[in-house]
Length: 259
Length: 207
Image (cartoon, rainbow over all chains, first blue to last red; front, side, top):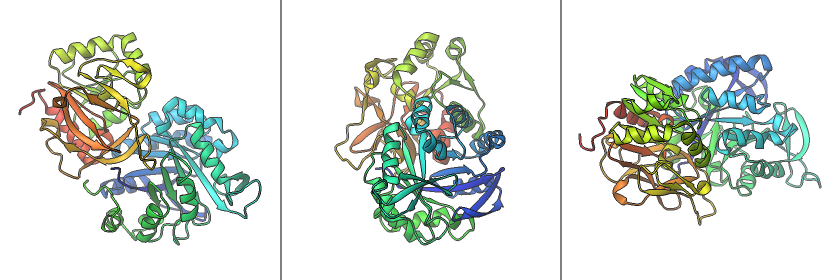
């Protein structure tokens, strides 16, 4: 039986680790590669690197960064931020990233998902979605809306519809990031996560809002998520990956403990 | 020295980097002559069986690999490299290399909650001793990502199993060849341990 995964997200800006609260107030908090190595040794199951500057000029820096990560980390990791073409995705994958995350560019041109899935495989194509709660309307019946450009631009696109569409287009995994919960440490958006996890046949990674080990338990059980993504709670040393996984294990969730 | 076969099937560099991490030099090649004379071979791969087989046949790498296998060269197959060593694959109904009797089949899952691809960390249970799998303890997990799995015709060729809606073969082998459906290069310390053992393996089943 597959274990539930603990995923750590590192926001990278110009090669440095950054963390935002509600997608703003970004500050640098250290060397991402040293941090990643620390999490790897502490038993994290997967890493996600988001290039939050995501400019064209930064793309080469990111490729060198990915190569360096791949020399030091021997578990799967993905990269996201500013991926706009099959070429971007293929380069990052060839540099050593197991998977790539698409977000804004896929909303602007949804065929990007199928093109990347065709080039590097569905298993390597992750659709990341930034979602906020809205009043349900005819256009957005699920009551959740996709926002892009780092969580600042509303799109009028229904969150649930987009998740299902992403799967149909060939995404092999979804990251569900709640803008409302991001950085709050009040817990994941359980309803949103469960709604999407129950509607698709691909794995779902819950993101945004982890503050305590109980939050991970809640989203992996009640939220039906396959993986829980954390950031702040491990970056600032409140919890280690080991402590989080032992907590989950003690509450009966199957996690990887031998490493 | 390890020779990694590059046949246009996925990210070969991660295997090479993992070898470097355990202090073993590895070269990447798509030259059949280099493969045929290699000291030991890693046959990796991610992707689809039909295109991989077509590429191997077009380049003559299929014959080189068969020759090395017959000559007793230690060979480690990974993922797709654990599937196309069988006689055929359901993926595109493709005839494959036939180094081990059996076929590669797709997961058929009754439980709607289980997902395909089988992606993530799962327990691997060793079913018969093998020098490369010696260090694996009950509860040890490895990283998988696949929709098809190898199904050897004879149980004697199965060395480890895992479970996803039922048991499936996680490692298979024959003589100087051992192949695993999971990715040792992406499975942390436990995976690196397998590569380390492979770098010292003489291809014999007792050691």
